Amino acid sequence: LPRNLNTIECVCCGGVRYEQCDISYPGIICKDAPNPYNKKYRMIDGKHRLSKMKSMNITKSPYYVIDYAIIKPLLKQLQRR
Image 1 (cartoon, helix red, strand yellow):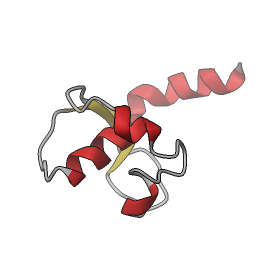
Image 2 (cartoon, helix red, strand yellow; image 1 turned 180 degrees about the vertical axis):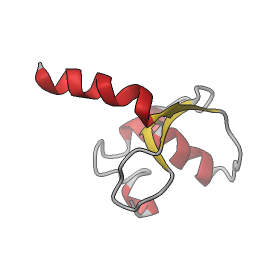
Image 3 (cartoon, helix red, strand yellow; image 1 turned 90 degrees about the vertical axis):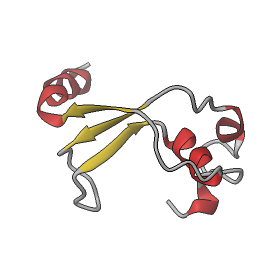
C-alpha cells in the first residue's frame, strides 16, 4: 500500500493499530508464498510495525521467516472449517 494508507491514515484501522503497535515484536513473513507482485516474500504479520519503523528510519528488524510449503497445508485446513 502507499505509505499514507498504512500509517496514521491506515485503511484498515484509521491509524489506531499503527499508533499502538509495539515495534519490539518481530513480524512474520512467508517465503515463496503466492502474492500479487510475484515477490519472494509475503508479509503475514507486522504491517503496522513495519510502517512505524520506516517512519522512524529504522532499516533493520528481526522477522520470523516461514516457508510457504510448511504453512500451505495448515491454510487448507482452515479453509475447510
